[in-house]
Image (cartoon, rainbow, N blue to C red; front, side):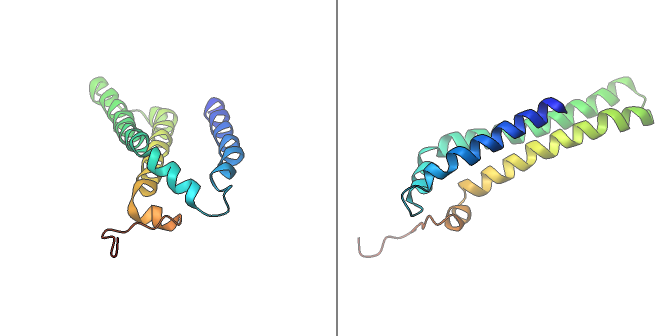
Length: 119
């Protein structure tokens, strides 16, 4: 848990330090360009996060199916950590899905036109 919190802290510090560069122009064009250029990377990370969440639960369930016994201490010790890992990966996937979606980009100020009238 200490290792995860260290990674989370480093990610938060890095994001807070470098996110301002995306908004440096005074408008939201920087973040829009960043999202557009990193679109394939965001989609790949989203897919890997969903797969990682599925594999975490699958590994947890397969361990209990293979052993054939479930003890209360195992559920308390291993189960909570597995569910925290699952929800972290699933949460990252949901956030990346939102950022890559049209609604998420509109929320960030990136206006998407489906039909460019007059152009």
